[in-house]
Structure formats: structure tokens, C-alpha cells
Length: 425
Image (cartoon, rainbow, N blue to C red):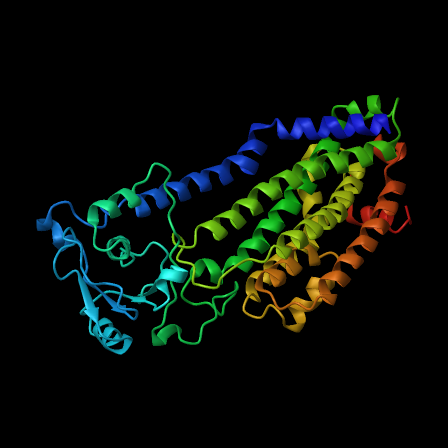
């Protein structure tokens, strides 16, 4: 056990100390958080930050917007908002007509229960998260001033406190183009937000990358140790089974750290960045998706990393690793490609079948779970089949991971690989 732990620690520490791993696993998520924070500060830092010109002569920079005050909250327009920039409408029908003829570029609906919920509905023909029409700072400033009884000085102190806390606004398009959409969950049913629409595809790509990169790294490490003859030194003091187990667990922990950093970043940004990303009211990612993500990553990695280890035992040098990786990863690569094309039918027969088949379920099931509506028995069955597959693959590869293969210089062949897995060689 101690020797296996030494192999585990060596693989883990060697991997996480690589600059390339640190950049991909933690650098890119950190950069995403910094960009998000910068956008949030620029958009919500103050009422004058790119929304209200300091000089009224520059009012031409703004596009006219309207609002429907259902609760009678707005009684005064702050003096620093250019005249005619915010137009009041008696109801949504009049505001929609003005939007259609181009009199305004967007309008806001202030619900009667605004003081209780803080919800502000923004209707705009452009669903882009960073659309120029989303110059909502003026409307937010107007609401704040009126909530505080028209006291602009007090509103300014509230807007810029020592510890700034920005309340996320919850946009909910109401115009006819998106009347039938459902943006409460990710998927193609949401047309007004590209991020929500393609979130299942994003999760599909992420899990494909996590599983393949971690597994491929195991193949390269074993091949490199065979080529530089380090494997011969290891086998003088440790069994092939201990080498196999230590490497799989060590690189699995490194892959889990990478997956946690990326998925955690996506989850946090979506939960906290509703206003910045133009997420509609009612949208949320269930915490259960994180649990299932952990399950399918670990099981998927266990299957493919073990297969890669078996292939590594048969590969004589690093030059052949690219070809071998494609042979082993072909099932999950096919499911990745298919998933990109059937994103609009995530619960069809093909998607369901691939999400249950052990070699394709780690990516396809995550895509379906992100969309939602998957019966509980399906992820449970898929996980059980993955566990069974991992056990069978581990037993098969354990038979391949011995001195005869590890010290052999024989060239790799697909026939030899699958024959060894089936116990025929």
C-alpha cells in the first residue's frame, strides 16, 4: 500500500506542478472570473459608468427606452437623466407598439411587487447578453431614487457604499417572438439567451475534454517511462498492479481538481451573474447536476484511464501514443460528435441509448441531465453499468499490465490490444 501511495503521490505532484496543467485547470477559470468581475463593475459600478453621460450635450449617445410602471412607484425622473430618454407608457401594449415602430429600442416593466421581489422585466428585440440596448443603468438609477423618496444624494450613497452589493435584475422577455420559450432550464427551448440555449453543449464539450485529457496523460506517462526505461527500475521494487492503481488514482485526482475548477466556475458565474449574462427569471441549475457530474466524471475516467493504461502497456514508444489514443477514445469521440448534432432532441432514442451505453454515457448523460427531465432510473442505470464496465476493464487490463508487455518492444496493433482485453493474448 505504501509503494502504491508513492506512485500516486509522484503522479499527482508531477502533474499539478506542470505550468500547462496549472494554466488550463486554474488559469483559464480564474481569467473568466476576472473578466466577469470587470464586466459587472463596468455595468453596475455607478449610474454614470457608460450609461448616463456626464454632459447632457452627449445625450445623443443614448438610445431612447420606455417603461411601464405597474405599481405607480416612479414619480420623478432624476435630473441627471437626459430629458426624453425614458418614456412612460400606460401599459405593455402601448410600449410594445412603440418598440415595433422603432420609437424605443427596449422597454422595462416594473411589476407591482417590485419592492418585495426586486424583479425588473426588460423587453428587447436583441437577446445578446451584452447588447447595447441593455443600457439599464438609467432605469436602475431611476428606481433607486424613487424607492428612496426622490432623494438623489441618498441614492448616490446607497449606489456607491463602501461594501458594494449589486442586486441582480431578472430579465424576462415578453414580446411575441419569444412568447412560447422556456428559459427556466438549459436547452433549445430558450431562444432569447444563447448561453442558456447552448449550456448542454458546453457541458458535453467540457466533460469530453476532462475525460480524454486525463486519460491520455496516463497513456503518455506510461509510454514515456517505458521508453526511458524508468518502468524497469520501478518493477524491481513494486508490482505492476500497484503501478497501475497508483497512476490511475493519482491522475484521477488531478483530473478531478481540473473538473471541479471548471464546472465550479461555470456554476458560480451562472448563479451570481444573472444580470450580467441576461439570464431570465426562474433560471437555475440544480445542485444535483454537480453530484451527477462528479459521478459520471469519476466513472468515465476510471473506464478510459484504465483502457489507456492497458494500451500504454503495449505501446513501445511515445511516437505511437497519438494513434493509440484515437483507437481507445473512439467511442467517446463518436458520442461527442453525435451529441453536437442531436442537441435539439436530447431525449430521443439515439440520445437515450448513448446515455446508457457505458462507453458513451459519461458525456451524453451529462448533456441530458443539464437539459433536465431525465427519469431517475436512467442515470442510476447508466452509473451502474459504468461501475460494472470499470470493474471488467480493470480486471482485463490487470492481466495486460505485467512484465511481458511492459518490457516488450513489440509494436502496437489494434488486434493485439483488443485481443489482450478479451484474454486472447
